[in-house]
Length: 401
Image (cartoon, rainbow, N blue to C red; front, side, top):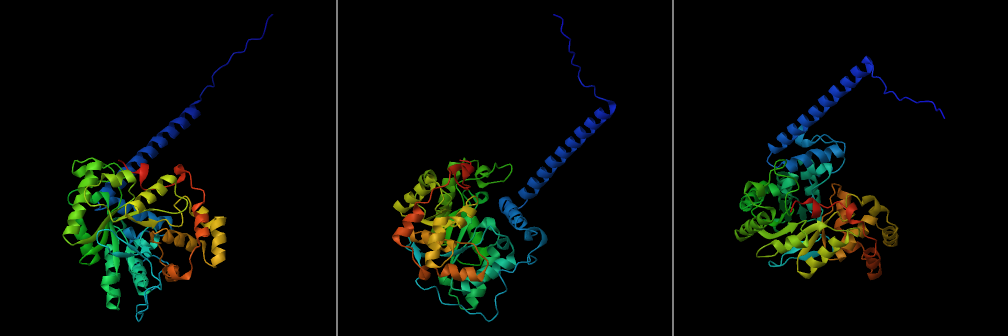
């Protein structure tokens, strides 16, 4: 049987089509070249700064909030309603009723359990607003200030401390926590810690932490003290810890600790164990993080919690969780208050970040305003944990160790 023959002919590309394809290819190559060049320039500029990772965050955080970064345009230009200027005649308020503390190993120092975190919001990267926020906090009765070299705000915090002392806040009541970034890791970490004290304008820092177990990025992108000293991450962590202990022995630091360390990192350290491990801690953290909490409790390592209201991927869940909301209604408080109070009753210090005086006052009153019952604590404990893959931790797989 004869069947028709079907002949498939490729589409002929006309001269016009060829020109268009050539034009697209040229512009694509140019765009890729421009992108590569831009990334190279940005990496070069960041590497030229003393703390590239800090500079990157100081630029990104304000931009995310819709503001020009002070690190680029200068400080004091950010148009925010909070924190407002501190009244010139404002005097220190009494410390909070029923104030809670966490006792640290070795020194027996009592660290205030409710502090203020000076990170990760636009106002934390403008020196004028940082000084205002810390001064408000100290005059309202707060005493624990949590910062880090990476936040680039030591000097502004120091200015606020000096003004608060001038107005009547006893310096020996103020607790400053700061952190050593990977760029300052290595045998000379103690030298950097002395520089932090000079920036803060203090003779001694109450608590200094290793900010993370190791670098987040390769040294060719972000320089770090490990690569500079020819050490692998584990070796550098140990060397840096010993250098931090030197700063304690010299009296520059009162207590030493770590941040974002898992159990395996804690076991790496030689000699004296950390007084504190600062970690993300809330009802949504995965089982691994809860196990870390238990390990620290069993080994007399105090915990300071950040992201108490939920991590970067859990904030909306935290605010809307029906169980937490129901408990909040029973006490006539906010869901945020319930989550912070839950952490406090777990024996954890908290460092909520705020630049609003009203919220500072509310946070400082957590100890006296209400208490969760054993049943309510168990209800929050039972909240389903987030899938590990959905939780954004600085520690864990993000750290190159």
